[in-house]
Structure formats: C-alpha cells, structure tokens
Length: 45
Image 1 (cartoon, rainbow, N blue to C red):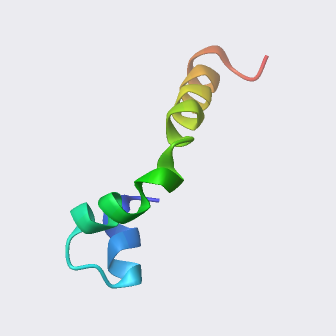
Image 2: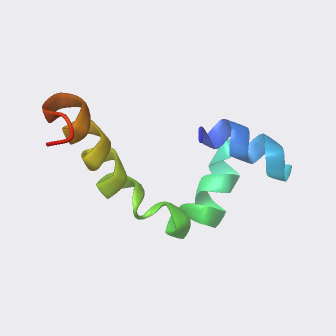
C-alpha cells in the first residue's frame, strides 16, 4: 500500500510522520520486495 494512502487513511497530514511513527512495521518490506522481484524475473519455479 502506498505510504501516502496509509497516511491519509489514518489522518496524518504528512507521509513523513507516518514513516517516522510506523517505520518498525515496514522492516519486512525489503524481503517482500526481493521476493516479488525474483518472481517477476524468474517466475514461480
């Protein structure tokens, strides 16, 4: 989910505030991004 959408949904005026407050919740995003990219390049196999 784009951080701007999350920020608006929870009522933060600035996405930077959301990132500062919830950065700990985004730690797994790097691994998820790597998996999605690998699947896109190499397929499911």
